[in-house]
Image (cartoon, rainbow, N blue to C red; front, top):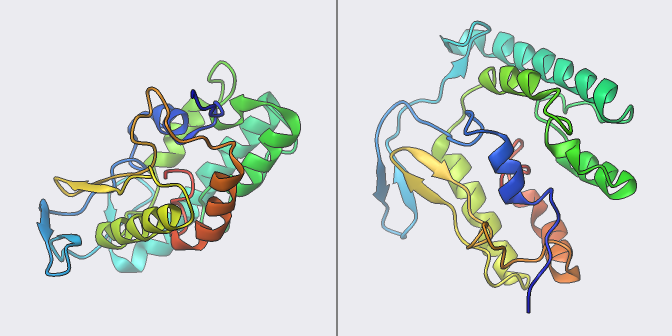
Length: 210
């Protein structure tokens, strides 16, 4: 039986992000290694932050990087309010978009362009600028967070939900095993219940990815 997914599905959302840094959670070095418990790991390189001009910041400049990221996201939000819906929510204090509130707004209005940077990409430029200012994060922690989330989704009835993968120091999110022809229905009661039960497994900023 063919299962239905919403246009705001993980696959659609990831495609719209156009492989910006939110998609490739990079580390300073290295490919994946297998640890003794079977969980993939990356080299223990220290996580860095992006400075306001896009370069790597020292730990003391992390706050400035986060501020620049938040300001850029706010500019994107203001564009979305002007072009798509006046109630488009503020970003979180961390600078990441609040996907729970965005998804609720999509449910109420039926405006699927809410996750697309506008129906005709009016706000895509602002979205890309914000993504380039996203502070770099610990890839190993991101991977382990997504892995815990995937396991939780399966334990709560979404049996086809796949694990994330580590490839050349990048995290490839898990989820639907066949995004081009979805096998996981995001509209099903089981999926919605699992999503709610497992939401705390994802670190801030990952809720729009997996």
